[in-house]
Length: 411
Ligand SMILES: [Zn+2]
Image (cartoon, rainbow, N blue to C red; front, side, top):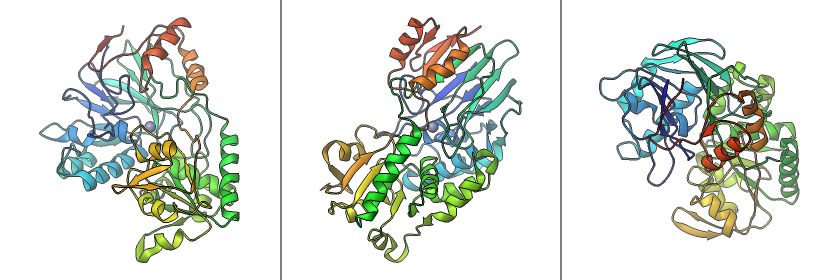
């Protein structure tokens, strides 16, 4: 089995791995300025996608330009999320180099889509492929690819401990080679219950003092996790941005949620914002949490809320995810200022950050990989893949960190 790394090698973003030139695993976009796409122009016989985040499925529709119509295999939520993301990319950037596909390419996605549940083997490009629950977001999968001789396990993004939205992964299928993500290979997450408690206490304090809390959050996964947190602690909350649509969609797939009943309660506890008739401005005068995109303050309704609440020190901005270098969210954390719509604004409201990560941390990665002690390991999807591969080797693993375009043959 020959593996070629077209993206996501020694970086986070644009994940893409080509197996024997015929089977493509993930095809993502790296959000950057300008955005980056996988290297080469693969023309696979079939595509398999691990989960519905932009850096794993964002570029999938472009595989359907021209006459090629490879079937695309994924779980039902991943299919829906890929469509949602593609429509969003098209709406924001259609017709420019920031959108690598056309409306026609996008329409074809539905024609070639093949959905599968967990642990239901299917055939793709002559391989037997099986999805296992990866515990990252609803529908996220580890992918096992079997050519009859060699079994490749591609982890996709995964988490080993429970979130409110999804349970941690417990699947450890037998494999002869593992490609593993390594996003948080040098981070130890604080216990989730501790993070949650601190977050809730901080939000409640602000509300008691008469303030408003803006909670920037990614639309897929994080928004719903925070809705569940707010419901569990009876924190009044509004939800704005693409996370609303994603929430409605997840409701259709209860089997991919950890607790469908809790999810239903969280949905009815939250108030969805339409944005009509100056609703957003009115909401900023309420004592409530506002969960809104974008997670890194690079667009979305958060851009309306922040200018409204920024000058009152009673208010708060609670960041809930990793802030990539160069984003307004990162700038706000580091300097207390944020550039909103081209204007640099000082922020008097307090700014905090909480680690609600949906990825395994260092202990989680080692715990997972220990099940594969005797098999070669290729580390991708991280900012320090090479260093992590070194660490794995020093512990007796056979590990490497591929670079873009590099080819590995596994027997
Ligand atoms: Zn992801």
